[in-house]
Image (cartoon, rainbow, N blue to C red; front, side):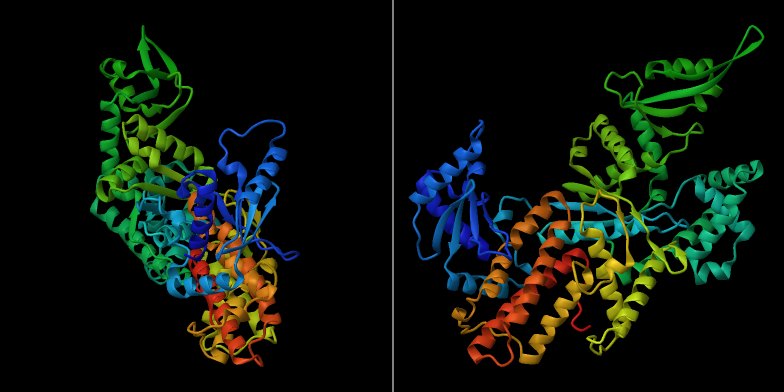
Length: 614
């Protein structure tokens, strides 16, 4: 890695002066962000990061003085051409020709692995990661929340895989629960087999909307409960209907995910764990964790007394069962999560009729996945409204004695407002994809600079998807944001369209002037400020990957790629290939190839397929 060789060289010299091991210093040496307004050094050492227990009123002044004193003790060499002190930092400028030569060679050599081979990741163990994402509910709206889960989970899985981890991508479908009793009854009343086959998601949603209007009717409620009970009892006819719903929905999802460029290693679902959930309830009971909250009907001296929400400890349950067998069977099962064990915070894990709940099936799924995959980390990607659910899930797993619960992580994201198509509110993910493709195709058709492409519809879809992803990933995932079609689809500014345009433009440049060849490149031809800015920015790619790997936030990579695109656009204008001397043209082609290569790598991590024409 280009930045790595320079960091090691700087760390080696610092090591001798500070009497500290080089590996201790490497992570304190970072690339300096490129500035449009002024020349900047290439790397800087933060004095604060190497001083333990720094404190005091004069800390800033002390750090600046220490930076000056350290800078004076260091010497330039064949790698470092200038050393200076800044506010609490020591700044290092790399020999300009060596900078150009090393960066270009490294990008060329590493290709798609550029940045991931950095020594920044040398101490990070290769792990097996399970990532659960997307997870739509069959027959319900595939709304923007599911789209966010899909693209965020895909990014995390892509990043983990790129860094050498083994990744298992799981789509955990909402394919069980009382709503399927309602849906089963609804299909018997309003269903159409032909519509189900031709457009399963749309038709099931229509049926669900219709039956929901009658959901308050007591007879409908009873029929729905009866249908779901038949499902749980493995009634052949009920299971056959449910299986058809599930199979046809997955076929439709696979087709839509293909448009997104997303794949899964495993399609799982709550239905897989209905029986294992009962085993979990038995385990909770055996461990003394399952408690009951009940409404009991007690007969005494000829009168009926209703006692509400009586809590019974585990050691009282058998006694309660003998005294009030009906009440015991109808009790709701909870796990006490309160610190004082006073039931002030509980998680309900069992219905009064003994059937499992969503969290019970999640407990069973987590245990099953550990048994099946022996993972090192498991990541759940859902909206932030489920944060409480996952806190409870992880707490219960710990109480059950599963220490690996510490290695479970919930990556949450905020809500998106304003996501509407021209026809109104978005219902399904496909509506979004069709809308963005249509709008992008219209924009491309009306733009004079648009070049003729082999497949304009496919290009519009890829560019449109980039627009959606970049607008979504620009901020903190946990933040809510207002979606804007106009802002997302702008061809200039910080948008996915601009990234695609930059990539296509650089690819076109290589096609027009012949592919760049690194051999015998005269790096002295790349000393202009705009060329140096691109090279400096390429240096910091590994740091950006490292930052995103630590907090799983795509915004670091997005910001980096947007800056790279702006720098490349400026260089493209000020450093023409056409009409330049052969040596100059070849050197510039190599620079633009390196920029395009890293741009493409980053886009692919985000889940964007770079286009070569637009």
